[in-house]
Image (cartoon, rainbow, N blue to C red; front, top):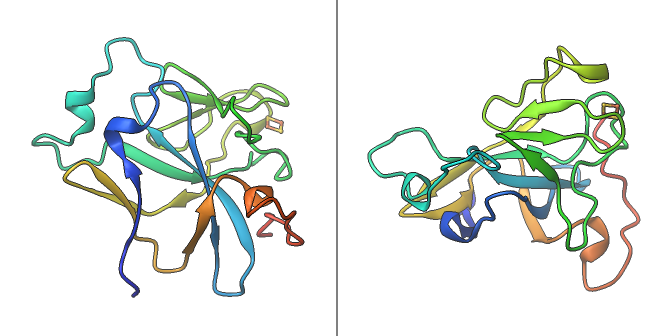
Amino acid sequence: MDDPTELTTVATLPDDDSYLFTVSGPSGLEEEVILVRTDAGLEGNSTNRATNGGDDTPPVRAWKNFCMHEPDQPFDRGGDVGAAIREGQVICPRHGSLFDLDSGDCDNGPAAGQSMVEVEVTVTDGTVYLTDDNLTFEHEGGLDDDDGMPSSTSHLGL
Ligand code: FES
C-alpha cells in the first residue's frame, strides 16, 4: 500500500458541513468522497471529542458522495455550501432521505434500508489520512474542481 495521504485535520472539519475530495480507483475512475465529523450537526459536539482523546472509534467518517436511491445524486454538490447535515445525519437534497453519519445507514424515505458506501480513513494525532487500499487521492473538491478542467469521467461506480 502507498503511504497514507494526509487529507485535513479533525479540528478544521466543519461542525455542520462536509469536506469534499476526489479519489480514483484501480481503473482510474474518479469519484467524489465526503469527509464528515460523526457528531456533525449535533448540539454539544466538541473539538475535544474530535481529537480522538482516548476513544478508539475515529470521530470522522468518509463516504462516497452519492445517494443510494439515485446514484447520480450527490450529497455535496460542491461550491461553498457543502452537504446538508443535521443532528448527525446527512440529508439527500433530492428526496430528503437521512443517512447516519456514523453507520452510513438510512431508515427513512426512498433510500430506506440502504447504506452509503464507506471510504477508509484513519485519524492519527488529529490528522485525517486516506487509508483505503483501493483508492488514490486526486485532489480537494469535486470532479470538476481539478484545476478548473471539467472531468471526462463519471463518478458512478456501478
Ligand atoms: S435521490 Fe436521495 S432519496 Fe432520492
